[in-house]
Image (tube, rainbow, N blue to C red; front, side, top):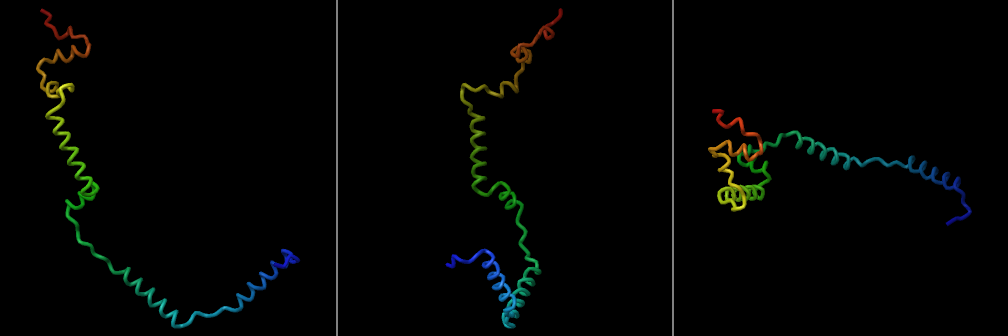
Length: 123
């Protein structure tokens, strides 16, 4: 290392090296240029030809839309569990069928704490 050099000396030396590199340009060999252009043309032609893919069935596309077989397995398991819980609900849960098929509507309205005097006979 030359400790006596200044930054200006480094810059001029670097400029001289760049000038030498600009003057000493070597051309691309003809054989290499031909191989590069041939390869580029073959790639360009291969991209121009359309690649026809077979049309997939509706079920295959639907299966992919859901996320494949693992997701479909989870969907089937959750559906089966929902049906099973719906038909054999635990005792502490209210049965939704009694609310749907209830015959006495005043009982349901009275449970809500509303004024039900309008439902009684005025006679």
